[in-house]
Amino acid sequence: MVKISTLLDGYKNFYKKYFIDTPDVYKNLVKHGQSPKTLVIACSDSRVDPSILLDTKPGDIFVIRNVASLVPPYENDDSSCHGTSAAIEYAVKHLKVENIVIIGHSDCGGIKSLLKGKHDHHTFIDHWLSIADNAKKAALEHNSDSSLCHELCEKEAIRNSVKNLQTFPFVQEKISKGTLSVHGWYFNMSSGTIEIIASTN
Image (cartoon, rainbow, N blue to C red):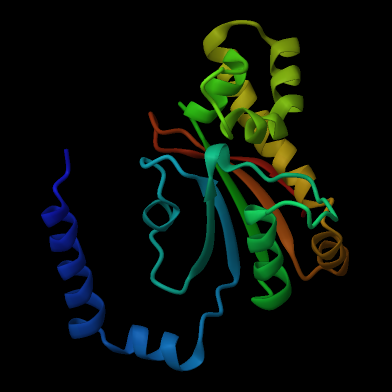
């Protein structure tokens, strides 16, 4: 178990790097605000931190993390909360990002859970994962072998999320104007490689 003191030691390293050694980084971010050009939608999995994976600095990328890197389809509905959709709206309309990158990955626990089916002890997870039901169906139709099916489903879920992003009117409008591109990437944790799964340009 990681001790809280270890996390605080990590914070001290961060503080030294950005507030002692290179103080202009946060001074400029506070003075001018954030202006990232890329929105990254990634999995909450602790092994796939997009800031580490892409070797970015504070202010470089706007990040949404959720179970299995999923993007729900657009819903014009204010009867419930839409955390991922709200963050997409903020990134596109207010930050005016030029790129959206969805990063899925191998050995994804969310996709494993999706393939196993519904769980009695899940309150929120099963409903969230149903966003990728089409990916599950496509993977099972293509290959029933468990390991291959899992990888296929992970990749199909990325493609599905790229399609769902394009159901957001403000996303589609900017894609049509050529001011926004959407990309789907697959990170293989065993090999360390990234495979381009889908792209709008």
